[in-house]
Every structure is written in C-alpha cells, then in structure tokens.
Image 1 (cartoon, helix red, strand yellow):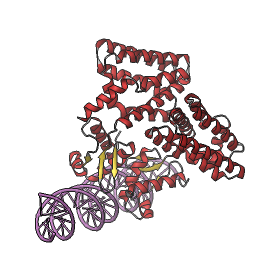
Image 2: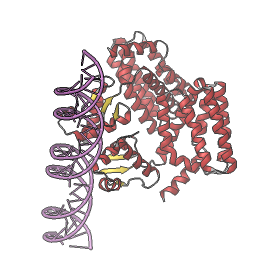
Image 3: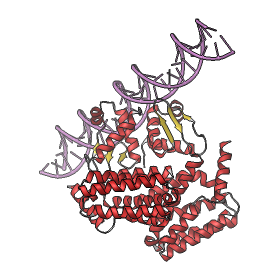
Image 4: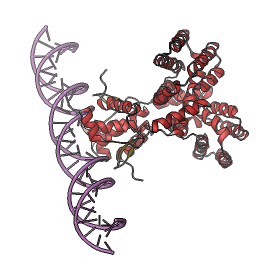
Length: 218
Length: 218
DNA sequence: GTCAAACATTTTGTATACAAGAATTGATTT
DNA sequence: AAATCAATTCTTGTATACAAAATGTTTGAC
C-alpha cells in the first residue's frame, strides 16, 4: 500500500521522537531533516503539521518546530485518560465480545504466562499489547478503538519502563485473568473497573514512573 | 496572538465543513480554495494535513482530499465515546471540583432554565455548553479536558438538532440538577453514571438523530 | 453503438525560489 | 567591560515551477 510521503515521514519522525532521540524543547531543523530524508522541505513541513495535532510537536510561528515531551503532570493525565478509555472498552466489550475473541484473549494470556516463566520481557510485552488491542476492538466501537490505540501508542515508551519492575508482571497476569472473567460473565461494571485499575498509575507504579522520568531527564 | 496561516486556514475550512457546506465524499479543490483564500496551494495543503488527523477529511494519495462526514454508525460511536469522556470528567470532577465552579454550574443551570422559560433555544444552547465545559475543566485533567472539548466540538452540529425536540430541554435540565448534586456530594460513581446517561444517545434520542441525518442527506 | 487506445488536460506531489521575520555578530558608544 | 544598535546571516512561510500520476476526451476499430 503506497502511502503519501508526508504520511510516512511523519511516522518516521514520530518514531525518532519516541525512540528518545530528542528531548523536550529540541528544535526540529527542517533543512537537516530534509537532507536526512533526501527530500525537500515541503513534505517535512507537511509532516510537522500532522505531528502538531497529536501534541508531539509544537509549531511556533516564525520560530520553528519543537518537540514536546510530556512532563510528569501531563503524563499522569494521559495515563488517567488511558485508564478511562480502557474502562470504556471493557464496559462495551463485556456485552459485545465474541467467543472467538475470548479464545484469543485466553491465548494471549497463556503466552503472556509463558513469557513470564521464561523471563522473556519482550515476549510478555508483545502478548500484553495483543491482549489490550483485542479488548479495544471488542468494544465494537471503531472510533473508540482508534482513540484507544492512538493513546496506547503514544504512551508506549513510558509504559515499557514500568514492566521492568520486579513482581509487576505476575500481578499484571492476575489482573488479566480477572478481566477475562468479567468479560466472559458479561459483567460490564466489573470489566470496566478492573481494566481501569489495571491501567491506572497509582501507588508504587507512580513512584516507578517518576523515577523513570528522572532517569530519562539526565 | 498572530497564528500561522495554515492553522487559521485549517480552522476556517473546518468551519465551512461544519457549517454543512459540503457533504460526504466531496472533493476539496486545492486551487479553488487557494484562490478563495487568496493564498497559494502550499498553506492549503498544510491545512489539509491537519484536518486529516481529526478525521474531518481523508487524504487519498494522488487522488485528492475528500470531506468525510460521519455516517450513522460512526456518529453513534462518537456519541458513545463522548458519553464515556463526560462520565470520566464527572468521575474526576466529583472529587476535585472547586466551590467556585459549583457556583458557576448553578449559575449556568439557572440561566439555562431562564432560556427554557423564554423559549430561547440559542440561549439554552450556549449555557448548556458552558455547563459541560465547566465539568471538563473541573476534571482537573487538562489532557482529558482538551480531548473532551475536541470531540464535543466535532459533535456540535449534530447535537444542535437534538435540542429541537419537544420536552427535551426540560428533561435535560432535570439531569443537570442531578449531576450538580452528585458533584456536590463528591459521589464520583453517580456523577459518572448520570453524565453518561445524559450524553448518551438512546431511546427516542436515537430516532431523532437518525431522522436529522436523513434530512441532512437530502 | 460500444469498447478501447492514444492523446490532451487536470491535478497532485515535490522541488526550488523568494520575501520577510528572527537570530547573530560586530562595531560603536558610554 | 557592558550595552546598544546596525548589518549580516539563518530560518521560516509562501509562491511558483515542474514532473508524474490520474482523469477526461477524441479517435478508431469492431
């Protein structure tokens, strides 16, 4: 599927920012990026426009384009919203999920457990993501699914660090089981609340996130 | 505050689309718009990039830019998400709202009631909007506030028609009262549920929305 | 009359050119 | 030496130019 250039350039710059190549306030040099990508300034500028809407970048008129890494406050706010979006997905999924999807959730969970046993952080990460994406889709609301995926994606680099914490993976597994149960029972309220709690940043998770941010700032 | 051109152009095109000047699938002619705005194609194209991210417009490579008016399904999905976002705002606001904001909500409600009594649809509409914007802000989560406002804005043209329905305004008023009560009591769960129900499109509201869409399609 | 192929016309995507607003440097003054 | 202003250099924002793809039209065959 051939996609237009500005689109793919935006994605690539996005990845560069996510990868941690830039810190907050860094200016994105149009001509340097243009050379780097082997194109002219025009498609770079179009990409900037797209990135600005996601909040990843700030366009200051006549000044330039600057990367905007979320600070601690903004990050916590985004996790709060993520928790609510997941809760909403769970609420809808509880009454809309297909049998096949339940099977897929169980499969993802089983592979998650295997990854935990094997100490395979990457494997755990991937299956965990699959678990959540299934729930987004099973909300039966394509718009919600899209919004959830967008934010999920944006938070990816920050969530990654949380998994490193000892014991987190097995606790997370138990929560996954509870979520599947609620979905199987069609219990919308429980599904929503369990998912909210699962995603929310509270207690020790909060400390971990802050610590990770402090390290990243150095 | 001088804003860059592409920004203001995007906003203006957005308004043109909201105003109903275009229907689904219409192609946005770069050169025509450029002439219309008295600029070259470049800023128009940058504006298109911004609009595409909000989903208001679809960029088909080598084909052009087409307006994407939500169909019935997408619209219902968006209202579902709006209901969940408002519920989330209410949940947070219940434990974070300031005394001043409660005063402001009551004031908005009083003016709403006055508008209902006077049969002033526009007045009702404006105060009703103020009521909801206050709750977004009182979520104490700037990111959530922004997301809620964005979707609220997107749904504006469709919500407007629902108000026309007989009896809707007074029922809505009663719901507002219940929402304020929950917020005053700090009852997060009730605030969330009441707001969700208030915003959700169900029962007769569904029929009205469908009817409005059918009319718009003609 | 229908279909298809070749040609002409639009229209998009990108590069380049140019104008105007920032930033920077260096000279001049206090 | 610090501050200020002017001139220079960079950078952004927009217009224009051009190439390639898509669309539309004419022509010709069947």
